[in-house]
Length: 358
Image (tube, rainbow, N blue to C red; front, top):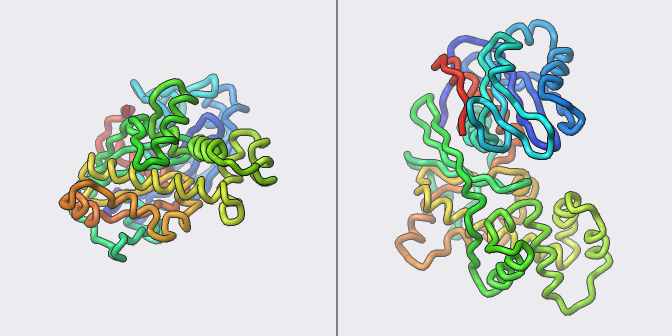
């Protein structure tokens, strides 16, 4: 899955834009490799327009690197149309054409998970230690075959996508698979499904379980099922703002039984949903787990083959054989989407047709 970048050295301005924070970076394309020069992180809510972020970057990096910028690409959560995207939780959006007019270079806006998909083969080629392989239940680490690569990533939400590598070219295909229905895998998750259906007033999606919010949902479900009085730690976590709870649940999983059961159930469901994803794409090229939750909790995925036992479960032996031949790895590099944006910027220079993706 290794490929090289363009022959001509240049610099791209790239960014990963979210409703809470945004990261801009300068990426050097040199000696057919990519190198992250510098990054800056800003609070999205403190900006009144994306143009302010560009101005901040220009002030910070004015000089030789800024003058060498040949292309820009920005990843953002949400559907992209006509090289524009409207962000949730902020009053402004991103217009790639406006950035292009300002800087005088091609600029592209792509979906955030498209950026993740593009970034994986870049890292595989030049930073293979960015990945943690998950051994199958038999201890095996199968070799990737030619074919589709599936990517699933639980973080703030749940992203699902796929990519195909053909020589030096990558085709990435985002999806809304994270919002597909959550299917129970045993009696406990049947009860979890009922709990979530009552909470949301509708059949829950996979993202209701596999996300930061999903960790909190599992935590609340387990508390509702327990006949024992909540521990002091559980009470403390419940009193926190909702966005702080997932981190605290994970941090205390080694010492608090409810937190531990939360992480165990989260990983089991993750394995089952990842299995369905791998089969849907027939990802003989491998399955990658992106997103911050897996990267920060690798031990819960490795312990007792917890993830893989769920991943390999299927009612057909022939399909279990298929699953056992699919390599699975966790993406540990937070900047994967920045590398993906840099690839998309370079690809735009190759084709000379700047345009947005959906």
